[in-house]
Structure formats: C-alpha cells, structure tokens
Image 1: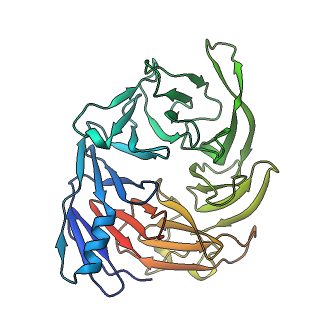
Image 2: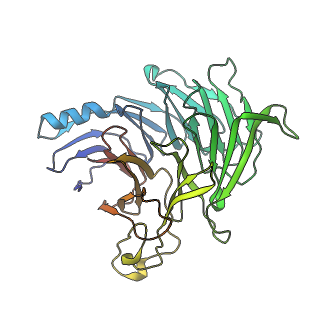
Image 3: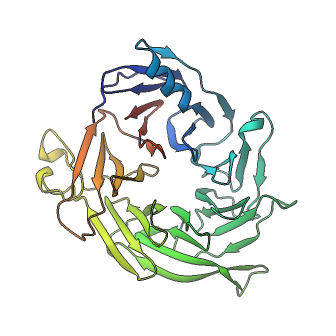
Length: 374
C-alpha cells in the first residue's frame, strides 16, 4: 500500500493507488481524534478548536469510484463546542449518538447527529475538582450506559436514559490518572489504563460500597503492570480484541503493543519498539532518520494513534509513530522477536488514526488534514 498526498490545508483527502482523490473542506484546528461509526458510513473528527465534524465517508468513497477528477465535498455536519476535544466515541447500540470529552471540562457531552443544532446532553461528574476526562466508552450491551476516566484517576458511570445527568457510580482513584478506557465485549467488565503501564479490571456485576462513598461502585478484580517500574510509561490505548471476547489489546506510549488474556493473566503477544537502537534491529516498528543522532530517547507514541483489525484470520495493528503509519502482524502469539510489518511514510506527524470497520481503510490526521489509505 502507498499514499502520495499533497498537503492541502483544511481538506479531507482520499487517495487510492491510482492517485485519484476526493477532498472536503474541514477546519482550522488540529485534529486530535478520528472515529468511524459501527458500519463505517460516517467518520467523526474532533479538533483542538472545538470542532466536531461528521463526514459522510460512504458518499466520499462512491464519488471517487465514479469519477477520476477531483471532487469537493463539505462535511455533513459540524458541531461547535467550546473545548479542546480529546476523545470521540459512537454509541454501538444507537448510531445516532456520540460523546466527546475534554481535559478542560469535568462533564461528558452527548450529541445526537439527528439534531446537531440542539444542545448536547451534559453528563455531570459532580466533582469538586474541575478536571477533565481523557477516555470514555459506551457499554456494548446496555443502551445508554457511558463510562469515563478522569485525570484525577476517578472512573465514573452514567445512564443517559435516566432523568438525572448525575453519575450512577464513581470509583475512587487508585493508580493515577486514567489514560485509556474500554468495556469488554460482553459488557461485564471495564478496563482502565494508567501511568507506569498499569491496567485495572473492574467487574460491573460486583458492586460494593466504598469506605467514603454513598453509592455502590464496581469492584476492582485485578490490576497488572505492563511496564518496568523504572519507566514512566502510560497505557494510552485499550481495545477489545475484534474477534475474541476474552482478550484485550493495549498500547504503551513507550512504543509497546500487546495482546493480553485477563482470565489467565497471560500475555499472548508483546512487541516493543526501542528507538535507542538502530532502525534495522527494531523489533516493533522502524523509525527512519537521516543520522543516528536524530533518534531521541524521549519520543513517545501519541494517544488516538492505534487501531486493530482482522484480515485473512490475522490480527493486525495499525499504529503511527512520528511520520510513519505501520501495519504489524500481532497474531503470532510471540513475546519477542521480529514481526511482520509494512509501513507508509506520511512526511508529517500523525495526530490521530482509525480503521474502517468493514473494508479496513485507514484514515489518519495530520494537523488539519485527514488522509485515507485503502
């Protein structure tokens, strides 16, 4: 796969192998997150200027397949918010709803794409500490149930079907701020990622009253550390395995990515990119530089820059690092060694990416541009 895209400011650029393209005017702010809906019909993008854009991805792809010449298409909708958007998620049980979070806001905003001009439903954290949320997740089995992890380390749950916007429950901080969050495919558990590679598991079926709480909250079943204690490494991404209910995929900002089975507390795969070594001996992904002095030990992987998908019965991770997008086979069930990998150079830092749920097309954002690889 290859992409050769021109830098067109504030555009959605779709380019195929034969160099045909479609572009759509977008925004001024830098894109922080990209998210497809369950069917891949719409692509949502959240930006630093508060713009929440909805792009009719199906229509863009159909236009490109019919015509060779450049087509211009505006986003289907743009929702204006007043905060720097950090995460965007679609409701898997109601594709007309999505939520977004921000570092500067303690509340979660729930939007309906059928009424874009209407005010959002605001899910209040009821917290005296006015800090925001980096990560959130919908329950895959309970309609209207939302989870979010705060920078204070709190984990909260809401039911949007209730008359009140107050939290159903709140878990007190145990392992520092929440960097990532996901729910298990059966809806029984919530996983949270923290500093020092810590990942915790909460059971939603086992509610207990805390020492200082006035509401029952989920019990923590287990907590694992996926990084050495000496390294300040954050678990920046958590995802359910796309085809296995019992496994999760995680990413560390130090460059590691792994597949983990919580039931057995066992790693099934782990690969680590060590950018202190020469490119040819990297065991996860390669980082091309003009000379070895340009390799910096403090480089970190960014949030919202990892996605997984299954193709030809193989689990593939799509990740970005600096100005490369990598495709790595992580289904080998190995804990070390070289892995199968392809890469595409983007020539600019990638800020966010996501994978189409049906055709595995990859979208990635560079500042205010969005590009597509397929």
